[in-house]
Length: 138
Ligand SMILES: [Fe+2]
Image 1 (spheres, rainbow, N blue to C red):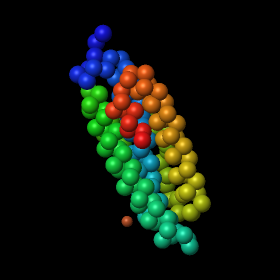
Image 2 (cartoon, rainbow, N blue to C red; image 1 turned 90 degrees about the vertical axis):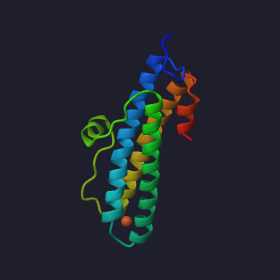
Image 3 (tube, protein in one colour; image 1 turned 180 degrees about the horizontal axis):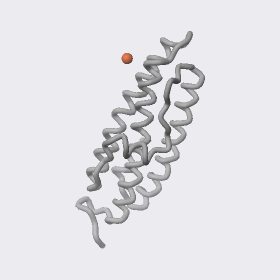
Image 4 (cartoon, rainbow, N blue to C red; image 1 turned 30 degrees about the horizontal axis):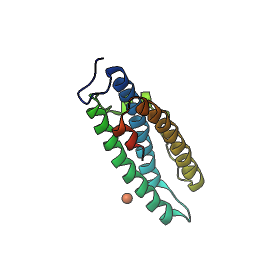
Protein backbone atom coordinates (compact mmCIF):
# COMPACT_ATOMS: atom_id res chain seq x y z
CA UNK A 1 0.00 0.00 0.00
CA UNK A 2 1.36 3.39 -1.03
CA UNK A 3 1.12 5.94 1.76
CA UNK A 4 2.07 9.54 2.46
CA UNK A 5 4.68 10.23 5.18
CA UNK A 6 2.19 10.16 8.05
CA UNK A 7 1.02 6.68 6.98
CA UNK A 8 -2.32 7.48 5.32
CA UNK A 9 -3.04 5.68 2.07
CA UNK A 10 -2.26 8.02 -0.87
CA UNK A 11 -5.72 7.83 -2.47
CA UNK A 12 -7.48 8.56 0.82
CA UNK A 13 -5.10 11.45 1.51
CA UNK A 14 -5.87 12.87 -1.95
CA UNK A 15 -9.59 12.54 -1.38
CA UNK A 16 -9.29 14.42 1.90
CA UNK A 17 -7.12 17.11 0.28
CA UNK A 18 -9.82 17.66 -2.37
CA UNK A 19 -12.58 17.88 0.22
CA UNK A 20 -10.50 20.12 2.48
CA UNK A 21 -9.85 22.44 -0.48
CA UNK A 22 -13.58 22.61 -1.17
CA UNK A 23 -14.15 23.42 2.50
CA UNK A 24 -11.38 26.04 2.39
CA UNK A 25 -12.89 27.69 -0.71
CA UNK A 26 -16.27 27.94 1.02
CA UNK A 27 -14.71 29.30 4.22
CA UNK A 28 -12.85 31.98 2.23
CA UNK A 29 -15.98 33.12 0.37
CA UNK A 30 -17.90 33.11 3.65
CA UNK A 31 -15.09 35.12 5.27
CA UNK A 32 -15.26 37.83 2.60
CA UNK A 33 -19.07 37.91 2.73
CA UNK A 34 -18.96 38.30 6.51
CA UNK A 35 -16.47 41.17 6.28
CA UNK A 36 -18.77 42.84 3.75
CA UNK A 37 -21.71 42.47 6.14
CA UNK A 38 -19.61 43.85 9.01
CA UNK A 39 -18.90 46.94 6.91
CA UNK A 40 -22.22 47.47 5.21
CA UNK A 41 -24.98 46.37 7.56
CA UNK A 42 -27.38 49.17 8.50
CA UNK A 43 -30.39 49.60 10.76
CA UNK A 44 -31.17 49.47 14.46
CA UNK A 45 -29.23 46.23 15.03
CA UNK A 46 -26.07 47.74 13.55
CA UNK A 47 -23.89 47.71 16.68
CA UNK A 48 -24.82 44.20 17.73
CA UNK A 49 -24.44 42.69 14.26
CA UNK A 50 -21.32 44.68 13.38
CA UNK A 51 -19.59 43.04 16.39
CA UNK A 52 -21.03 39.57 15.78
CA UNK A 53 -19.89 39.60 12.16
CA UNK A 54 -16.41 40.58 13.29
CA UNK A 55 -16.27 37.66 15.76
CA UNK A 56 -17.38 35.33 12.98
CA UNK A 57 -14.88 36.47 10.36
CA UNK A 58 -12.05 36.32 12.89
CA UNK A 59 -13.05 32.73 13.66
CA UNK A 60 -13.30 31.89 9.93
CA UNK A 61 -9.86 33.38 9.39
CA UNK A 62 -8.38 31.01 11.98
CA UNK A 63 -10.32 28.07 10.52
CA UNK A 64 -9.01 28.78 7.01
CA UNK A 65 -5.49 28.59 8.35
CA UNK A 66 -6.08 25.30 10.18
CA UNK A 67 -7.64 23.76 7.08
CA UNK A 68 -4.79 24.95 4.84
CA UNK A 69 -2.18 23.58 7.23
CA UNK A 70 -3.95 20.20 7.40
CA UNK A 71 -3.86 20.11 3.57
CA UNK A 72 -0.09 20.65 3.74
CA UNK A 73 0.27 17.83 6.30
CA UNK A 74 -1.64 15.60 3.87
CA UNK A 75 0.93 16.58 1.22
CA UNK A 76 -1.49 18.68 -0.84
CA UNK A 77 -1.48 22.33 -1.89
CA UNK A 78 -4.05 24.60 -0.25
CA UNK A 79 -6.04 26.62 -2.79
CA UNK A 80 -4.90 30.21 -2.47
CA UNK A 81 -6.58 32.42 -5.04
CA UNK A 82 -10.07 33.73 -5.60
CA UNK A 83 -10.42 32.16 -9.05
CA UNK A 84 -10.05 28.70 -7.50
CA UNK A 85 -12.21 29.60 -4.54
CA UNK A 86 -15.06 30.78 -6.76
CA UNK A 87 -14.78 27.68 -8.95
CA UNK A 88 -14.88 25.29 -5.97
CA UNK A 89 -17.24 27.03 -3.55
CA UNK A 90 -20.92 26.46 -3.21
CA UNK A 91 -21.27 29.67 -1.16
CA UNK A 92 -21.83 32.57 -3.54
CA UNK A 93 -20.43 36.07 -3.24
CA UNK A 94 -22.69 38.59 -1.55
CA UNK A 95 -22.91 42.05 -2.98
CA UNK A 96 -24.59 45.17 -1.63
CA UNK A 97 -26.37 43.42 1.24
CA UNK A 98 -27.06 45.91 4.03
CA UNK A 99 -30.32 44.49 5.33
CA UNK A 100 -29.96 42.74 8.72
CA UNK A 101 -32.48 39.97 8.03
CA UNK A 102 -30.95 39.10 4.65
CA UNK A 103 -27.47 39.25 6.09
CA UNK A 104 -28.26 36.93 8.98
CA UNK A 105 -30.11 34.52 6.68
CA UNK A 106 -27.09 34.30 4.42
CA UNK A 107 -24.91 33.52 7.47
CA UNK A 108 -27.27 30.71 8.51
CA UNK A 109 -27.27 29.28 4.95
CA UNK A 110 -23.48 29.43 4.74
CA UNK A 111 -23.07 27.72 8.12
CA UNK A 112 -25.37 24.98 6.80
CA UNK A 113 -23.07 24.46 3.80
CA UNK A 114 -19.98 24.24 6.05
CA UNK A 115 -21.63 21.76 8.42
CA UNK A 116 -22.64 19.50 5.52
CA UNK A 117 -19.13 19.59 4.01
CA UNK A 118 -17.56 18.93 7.42
CA UNK A 119 -19.79 15.92 7.95
CA UNK A 120 -18.75 14.46 4.56
CA UNK A 121 -15.11 15.11 5.36
CA UNK A 122 -15.44 13.50 8.78
CA UNK A 123 -16.68 10.24 7.30
CA UNK A 124 -13.72 10.06 4.87
CA UNK A 125 -11.28 10.98 7.64
CA UNK A 126 -12.67 8.31 9.95
CA UNK A 127 -12.38 5.70 7.20
CA UNK A 128 -8.75 6.64 6.79
CA UNK A 129 -8.21 6.58 10.60
CA UNK A 130 -7.06 10.18 10.23
CA UNK A 131 -7.49 11.50 13.76
CA UNK A 132 -5.86 14.85 12.85
CA UNK A 133 -8.39 15.69 10.13
CA UNK A 134 -11.30 14.35 12.23
CA UNK A 135 -10.28 16.62 15.10
CA UNK A 136 -10.38 19.70 12.81
CA UNK A 137 -14.15 19.51 12.88
CA UNK A 138 -14.34 20.08 16.61
FE1 LIG B 1 -14.19 46.74 11.66
